[in-house]
Length: 520
Image 1 (cartoon, rainbow, N blue to C red):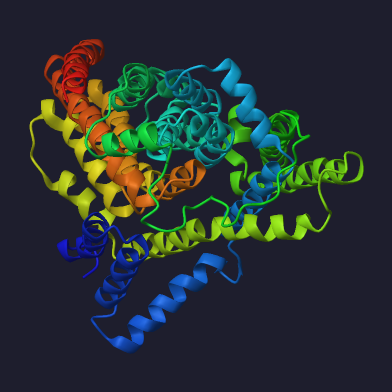
Image 2 (tube, rainbow, N blue to C red; image 1 turned 180 degrees about the vertical axis):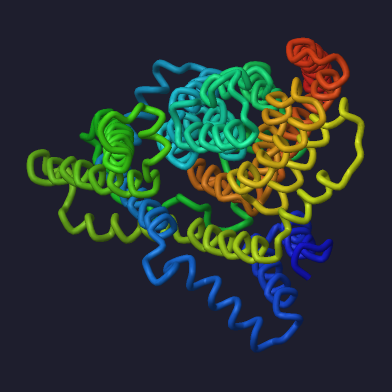
């Protein structure tokens, strides 16, 4: 079953079930079981062993703790505690009141969120969770739906990281590009120069980010997003209540200090940012050694460990704020600390359950060699050279959508694209690599089993399935326009002509959507 068309069954089953049933855990569970059965030729006992092993390797790998996964899970628990304490000390309340006086409109609340997403470009996980924590009080006050917030967060996290050389993503991609250039003896430009040249070739990223700002400014609500936005405006209910508990949302109302200030939110969030970035630089420098460049530092750092360290420091700082409210201002009883800690941890459990199942299905899909099968299609094909950029974009999108990982798609598809284009049309090497990056981000955006999609939902406090179905129309429109751009690029050989055509079509689509919104 490995490396064949049958390897597509588990991701397809999981994704279709998610979209049809709206039950994420059930759908992922069915996908996981089907993958195990395929791997073990439908033997129940061996399939069960495979499931147990897949779960086990989330926490232990090669006889040692799987620090990446464990640190991410611990960070989520810490983030839940931080959120709870920020609420208790009155930081969220004070920030909401402060922002309401200065950010007067729903448009302003969304634009501020998008700008924060662009500014915080170090890591996609960190971006999704930090921007969500800062922006949620502001967007809630202006009755912006959590689905819209999740869309803004998701569309300014991975898209920004994938074109930022000073980020965990940029370092990873530059490393792969360097390997490709070395293997094919290309010395016309360095891996860093190639990465910079590829930025304007990443049409999907450019259109996605533009779409966010235009959507916020012009109030463009497509498909299911319109229902969420209308409910938020008309009733003040920013998320759907019929799906049960929202990830990241506190289960019970906690006592809130009425003496807390805006510093109760700003200082913890700034501490999280500074402590995390400092930890990334320190860990990267320790791994790289003396004389390392900033790119070496980010290439060798451990983002998961940095998030954990940043989270620990932030919990301490936030707790000190709590102690100040208790001992100096006498605004809260100390016993609230245990309740806040437990409520914060509980608020993150739904996201953790989804993330663990997503990691399991990604692991089993990897064992089924789904990505390898999809990659082999392009290697064995005889498509026109002019169509290769758009084909690579589409295939990378399908692969990331099916496997739930853009990084895995980068690792598999970039070398293949390099190998093909060096032989067939060297002048289209960088555009084709950029098309792979763009397609992988697109597929990752749309995939309900993607960890970044899950964490964007968590950061926004939005039901995961609500985020998936409301973001799809925006992502698909940007992808279609990007595909046209890559066709033009392939035919004309001009990167800028392809981008201009995509932008012109984008303008036409936006004009139509604005008129549609006004008459519907």
